[in-house]
Length: 238
Image (cartoon, rainbow, N blue to C red):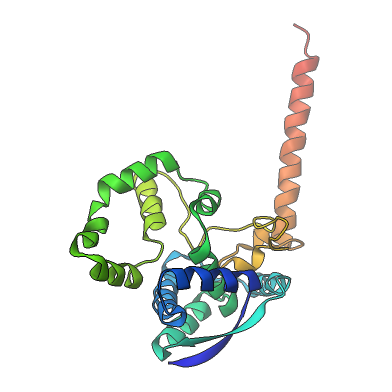
């Protein structure tokens, strides 16, 4: 195990430390498992490789968080997994780590806002029906249950909801592919911009990028056509 210096949105640190302490866990040992697992999931879930413009845009917005420098004590295996995954997706390492930490402290309403293409009432019922084996370890007692939970997918429930939705003909985004718009974390104590928490961004989301401007032009034309058709319809004598 050795230290890496990470720039983290400061509110995440206090909340994460509080939650980890209440769970009787050692923070960095827990994060070593989580970050290694999520690095593998990142390469599976990102729908492509960020352009250099998208990566720079994420970095720019990550800086608006005025992040705090934090030392994390991680294994060489985990650090290598993170480095390889971030290089493959072309995402800033600190954006990936901040996203994972945010997911760890987030509550269910957050994920319901993020994963908008899921019928949550249906999905939650189906998870209980189809994934009951996930709850089997609890029958073996507290210690085996804790070990199983700590070492498993930390977001297994939400990934199960995504999988079931898509198996049922839906089109829910993979967890690390789901886009957080700029105002996603707005609030009195929120983030100025949530863009820095994204792992994958299509260029269409970059303000000022030619692809973004083209999208706005197409949308404007579409709305104008709709308005003209409405005016013609309303002006047609009956």
